[in-house]
Image 1 (tube, rainbow, N blue to C red):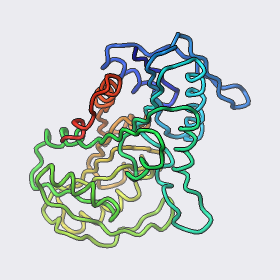
Image 2: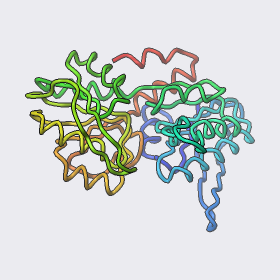
Image 3: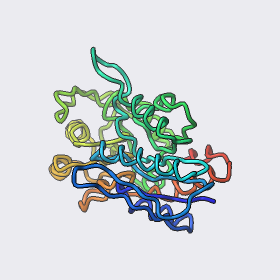
Image 4: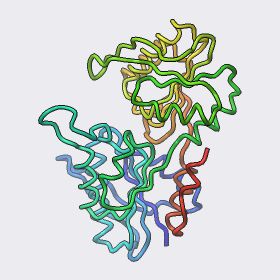
Length: 309
């Protein structure tokens, strides 16, 4: 029997997934003691069942990660047959390597914690670095938001479209979007001045006279997107839109977005921040995509067809 449990990270998305699967969320008490400790009590029988725990590790990341681990332990001790962690947004994914001395590889540590807690399988979407799948010693189903975003972009019927990567690290994703949309691509060369400040220097490719679509896996402060948009318009672009899989938006990002030349930020609801009430934000739901993946995992079917655009 398939059962769904939601943490406190994104209950709205969990409810949408349950609705798609024509089922209900298993009742669970997930609360916090006055000292900050998390308490979990699963209030329905899950013995011998196929359990899916829905919990993006969005900000506050540490709290939601710890909550996920405690939920997993509660489910394991309640004798769930199989536990799948559904993590649409995987926090710590940017800390996937040692890029300077004496720093951790936190993405690997988080993978170890999730496995040690008792998770049998992970379902996630658009990891910052695809190789993070290899950090797990359990199966990982890695979905892509591209089919959802591409459907929306194609419905807009934008002429003279140019797909642009806001930095050299996003070339692979940009190429995939350009190929799917049968259009040109370009790259913005940038320099990161600090955690919140970015300077865009030059553009590789032609954007003059084009309606630009910036694509990236995530945005947090919108610094990269705003700087890229400014440079693209200076180089002759007619308009700039941005599409990201994960919008982890804070107050600084919302202000930058408001002040920027970006006409529209297209994102998915993989995090609750993406549902912020802002005239420039278009939020697309990934609940049908995740629900279909959950159904296929439960029935032992392939999920590879979900990658098709």
